[in-house]
Amino acid sequence: MKQQYTSFQEAVKDIHDGATLMVGGFGLCGIPEGLILALVDKGVKDLTVISNNCGVDDWGLGLLLKNKQIKKMVGSYVGENKEFERQVLSGEIEVELVPQGTLAEKIRAGGAGIPAFYTPAGVGTPIAEGKETREFNGKEYLLEEAYTADFSLVRAWKGDKMGNLVYNKTARNFSPMIAAAGKVTIAEVEELVEIGDIDPNDVHTPSIYVQGIIQGQQEKRIERRTVKKA
Image 1 (cartoon, rainbow, N blue to C red):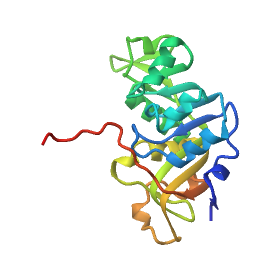
Image 2 (cartoon, rainbow, N blue to C red; image 1 turned 60 degrees about the horizontal axis):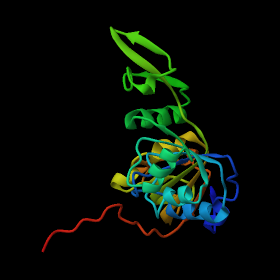
Image 3 (cartoon, rainbow, N blue to C red; image 1 turned 30 degrees about the horizontal axis):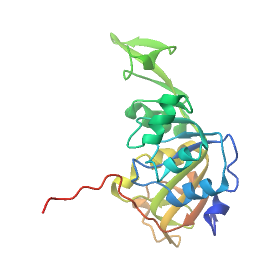
Image 4 (cartoon, rainbow, N blue to C red; image 1 turned 135 degrees about the vertical axis):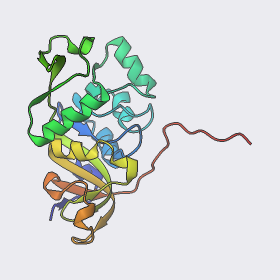
């Protein structure tokens, strides 16, 4: 049995100023909305956040950004967030942009206990500045170090009381890797079921990677809504 939190505030109580967080999601798809809102309320600051992007101006990680709670953002793109763009251009936030495939592998490697790996992505670009390169079979590769975090926050469709998680379609995105790469992983689930209710073959994140779990409703906002002309 993993710790089951009764409130989102309780779930984030140990997240401290200066912590490094990994947060699952792609845009607004599969983000741990309740946990992020609880961090906004807690007022924790000087965070280093590793996530694919920083949400939008008024939702997701964009709320932490707006409150100046993020000191450094590590991700693959700025996305739809105008405030993120403004803070980057004004030098108010430190940013590390990483090719998306490299970001995914750096997180996966961290969760697998692999300290670094070689990749051809970024060779010959500013991304390679100050990094070791090596040639394999006549091709140059760049050494990239893995990412780990003090806390990982993920959202799943379903979880059991042991902490086994199942994600729904594309909401799976980076979350299985992120769950494995955090020292402490907190899972926000839409449906909390009894042990044995999830077929072991359907588990995306095994319980060994999860330290705490909480059930909560989601707004599931759409990042950019488009409609068909009448």
